[in-house]
Length: 444
Image (cartoon, rainbow, N blue to C red):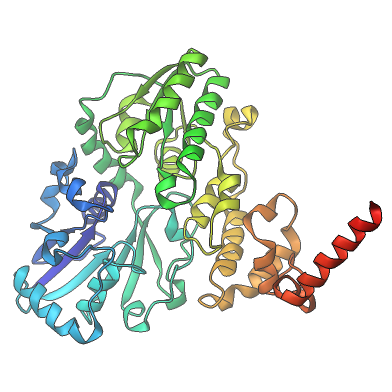
């Protein structure tokens, strides 16, 4: 007997799994379990994905739906990991609770670098693992060094073709190949979810603004994020859009829309704020937006690549500067959006839907950024990073790097290696401060 366990935390991810199953990306199995993980900060107050509108359309792909939160209660899925000595006990417990018996188990998980995916891979020692990615992070490096006992069991990275021609960097340190979930199968699944938006307002071809709740990730402050939404609205209005729909992040507080509503009144724009939790792709099918505006949301790329809708990005340059530490896993999605999509403030680029880079150039940039982010995991990428930086680094492309990072890695564009110690040397800094003080005294 073979049981496949599909771990999922979002409706979008479940739709990706459904498309993969429909297109034969997984071998036949005697039983298929959808393991629902609610990773919200307070899961008790946030509905899980199996209660989301449209889930019932995906349910029939699985024999059972099991709550991981209930299984490990009172622990949180993202914060709990089993101790090494307890792994056999946890496997016996899960086999009993989920009625696995002595079945051969195969796993399909989201983000193998962190829990709960990593915990599952460790508990079911020896089980083959498929990593599926529904967003842009699969194009970036693995964020943490993974135990080879886990990494060598990953057989592939299933991903959507959001940037046609661009190959994932994720898990390539283990030689894991990427495999595309057929676009036709995915859009067919999303078409099944479209009726879940029957309660949506009937608006045709609006400008659609996508909120991401970046303040929850400590990327922006709440005030900065509100201002970003206002800039989206102003940019859309400047392009002549008088009907605007704002789709806030499901977890964002209601106050995020108040400033936006006041701005819409001043701009004489008809603003509709959606309070129904629904996938952006459902809106694409129901409203056919004339323009989709966001920061670095994956939904921008699905609009562009899967639905052929006009898109524009805003705020990416500031985010590239604010993201800390440099190896923050959001850096590659922001880089892709910044390098590939037209800026909302550039009317000609938005109107003509001009791409900033071709896919080959974008791939070379991502490999250079990926090495700078994780040099210990991807040492083989150093020659490519050095070559790219030597040929393409300029005031514009410098936004994708930090000079201190380049210096510490002895890469082109950084401080010369023999001088790299200076910014970190307390004595040198003290002497420099005294010199500046004396110079200022002389000038007086």
